[in-house]
Length: 324
Image (cartoon, rainbow, N blue to C red; front, side, top):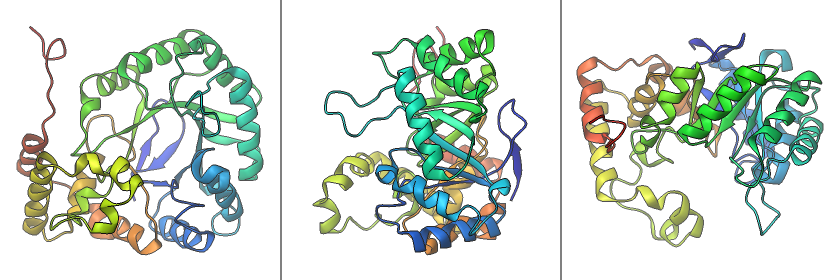
C-alpha cells in the first residue's frame, strides 16, 4: 500500500487508515484481531480510535492486539479526546484538565506510553482555544503524544488552531479528520482550503458515505434497518434522491472498470487534494477485506471518470467562496 507523509510531520502513513468505531460494540475482539491482521498484511499502518468508541472498549481491544497481532512500532497509533458521552449537559469538553485526564486513561487502555497522533475530537465553544491547545502542548512536552490533530472542526476553527499552534505551540498542527465522500463534500468549501494553506493532512472518515456508496441500498432498505433509530440518524440522511443519483453513477463507473462500487468511491476520495488517508472501518473482517483488495487499493480513476463523479456529486459553493 502506498505510504504518504502525514502533513508536515516525520510520520509516513498508509493511503488507507483503519477505523475502529465499531470495536467493542458490533465488532468483538476476535473480529477486531482478524481486521487488524488483514489490514497489516495489506500494508496498512495507521490505526485510528477514540476514547469514546465503545465506551473505551475500542482502545482496550487495540491495546490487547498491539504486540499480539502487530508490533507497536509498526503502527501509527491515533486516538482522540474531547467528545463526551456521560454528561447530559454537554457533548464535548476540551478543558485542559479533562483532556489530560482523558489522555492518561487512553494510554492505560492502549497499553502504551505514547500515541503518535492525538486528535481533538470536537470544538468546544465553552472553553477558550488557548486552554485547549495548552493541554496539547503539555502532552507533547511530556512525551505522551508525538503529534496533534483536530476532528470535525469548521474551516475557521481549523485555521485558528493551525495558526495558534504554528505561532505559539510546541509543534505545528498535523492533521484534520473530517467526514468526506462523494455524498458529503461540504469540507471543500472552507476546511480543505484551510488544510492546504496550513499544510495539514486531511483524514476522511466515512469515505463510503456511511456505507451507502457500496450500493447495498440501491434496491431499497430492509424494514429492520428503517426501524433502527441509529440507522435513521447515521445513514438516513443519505437515503434520498440526490444520493441515489450519485450511487447509480458510481455503480455505472464500477461496471465500466470491472471493480466493486466501493473501490470507485475510495479511489475518488483517496486522491482528492489534501487527502492523505481515508479511514475505512467495518463490522467484520470480511467486509474490511473488500476495501483492502489489491484491485481496490491499486485503482486509479481516469481523468474523464473523475470529472463525471465530480459533476454528479458537486456541492453547492456560493459566495464568498466562489468569488463575486
